[in-house]
Image 1: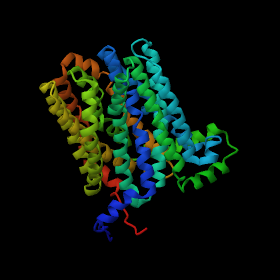
Image 2: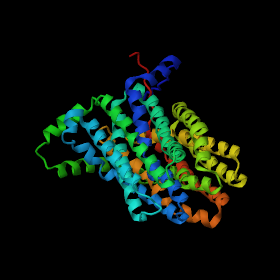
Image 3: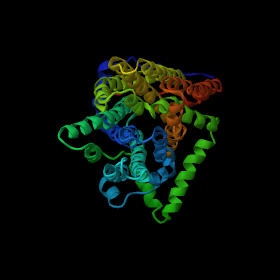
Image 4: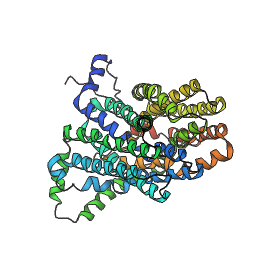
Length: 457
């Protein structure tokens, strides 16, 4: 038997950099921003608003549950795969029609949340508005993930992944530090605190227009023509049957793979360490005595730079090392960043220490996210089920952020911040054990090496 080993071509750095300027990669970059923007608006930024008006820490921790749509989005992902949006799909195409619909929904949901006030509104109403934001955001994520996988050529996948993750983190920074700046700015202009927060959320809703413009400028993936032909062939079938068929095919293909259950558990646990600490980072900083402007200044400056550098560093790691090795690197970096926050709790109200902590957290989290996205992409081996399977995997990854982190506020109250972040670092150990076991069973060999094609066009 003859074994052929592919030797990677020597990198051409000019070509490697120019790929980031290709139109499809730039479109993915802006869609990454659009995907990252809403997450904090129903998460950490909302928690700062709630903490400022005196909501109890335990209740704040429970608000992690409003992220439920991110964990169950795979349930309606087959709808996105199997059906077209009336009018919009005819005007814009299959994927872009769904993109525009989800972005309209997202803008409206953020405006509804802007009208809520955790100080005077029933918390169930605030939670309901946040749930609407998360649902619209999760739907947008389903479509963007499918659009990214289907529109990029093999030669553009690495650049697209790094650009997407870096821009995603920038979107999150805009809706955290940027939103806090905007709120403070409205207060300087004379608005009361409650009005300033509402106006700040209205500005974030307006920024959804960036994603809408990107959708209009994008071109529909070529694979949509095949899907359109299939939709036309099955136009006479009941929509429920079409959705059910798409769902069954996607889930059955994945769950019949070897080690499928262990892989799904690993997907849930890998980012849990990062999510567990991240759920309480904003309240932690406020409790130390920093103002929202202090936090925003550091996150906006050093945090933004660290995120961008970390995103592209993660792309380098994902290309330079085997997938299992990359995952080990990401796991240790996530654990280390949590210990840095424990040190921050010991240092107390120290601006330079917060600068170090925020920089390390953003840098390591961006690296870990790129590596994790590379792993999830490698798991989606069937081109017929990419959108639904990717939605399933990312939904499971959100379980840690949504459900397993729900008790983080109660733990912080009982242990104090120093021990809370030490415990959150140790939370990474189960995922490391499972990573070792999967590697021992040859799981990563079945995924094959990541192939990056260099072309002249």
